[in-house]
Length: 112
Length: 113
Image (tube, rainbow over all chains, first blue to last red; front, side):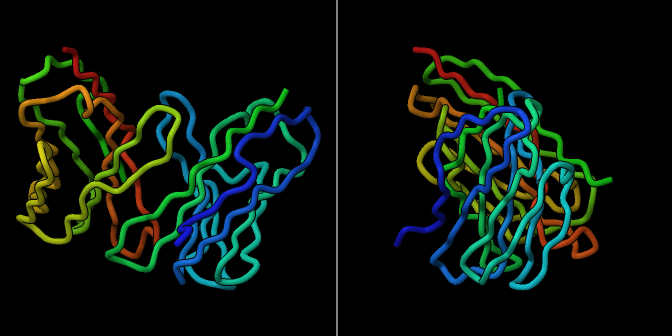
């Protein structure tokens, strides 16, 4: 059972470039989430999808877009990367209320 | 605004000592989760607390939940170096906040030998 798979694990972008972070889960979970983690800032929610076909903004959505492609996959897109988006990005999924998250291994993104 | 506050944010302790990490939150909730994160790694689930008075233990760690006080504690007994990590609590608030967890800032624990 792979759990939550994120790709890529590492990425370096130049300012203004675009990229998509991929996330897939094989646990038949309904909800999926994208967080960023910065030193001293804890985990901040970017976007989430409570169920297939729905997406909602989190705490820090500016500069990002998401797509819930199907029940398994939830991608995060940076249209025009900025140095402020240098961070570690975690995808997570959840079966439903009263269940915790299962996290992916993370993507370390550097924007230069 | 929902707030989840952990303290301390940094804890340096000697092996063999006991200590408690506190997690206070500002809304009603009877679901709280604890996670551990090792440096450079992802978060892994430690405890799931789903009711007032819930207590879970694994090894040298014990977590409890008091929903009336809006407080969860993570107690460390006879710390060992392997417990060095960052510990996060996360609250599952009412549906008015949406279907998402709200995390504390994390407590960095360093156990010195």
